[in-house]
Length: 191
Image (tube, rainbow, N blue to C red; front, side):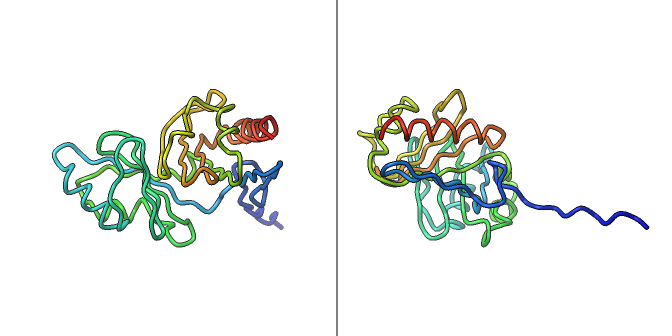
């Protein structure tokens, strides 16, 4: 008699079966696990048609440096010249990278990023004070839709500010525990 096959149980970036939520003072930190992520880079000579295709798929005007755009199911943010990161709910856009490739055949290089990044959403009052302890971004002067790459606890991360009370952080999935610890420590220090 052979042994039954082991059950495959999906785990979050923090190693749990359910996404983790932590609250300290007025700030809530949530591990977000339902995000499909793809990078989209226009190929040389096809910049205009590739950008037009991405804009058509997402129904968004593509953001420039330091900015993000959000609408419908999509969030798009600029990561370099003629390059964007695209996010959507995984439940409805599991094949996001495939769909973007099909929309711009031969015009863009698209890479699925789902397992490369972990996502944490911070909500609440006083987030500016939290991020002043984490990274050198002047969020006091930033407008909603600000997006930038920075270093948090020696990790390359993207910070997207929807409002001053709602900020998303994408960091390397392999360092999710370290990033979570840094965010939680800054929350406790600020409040």
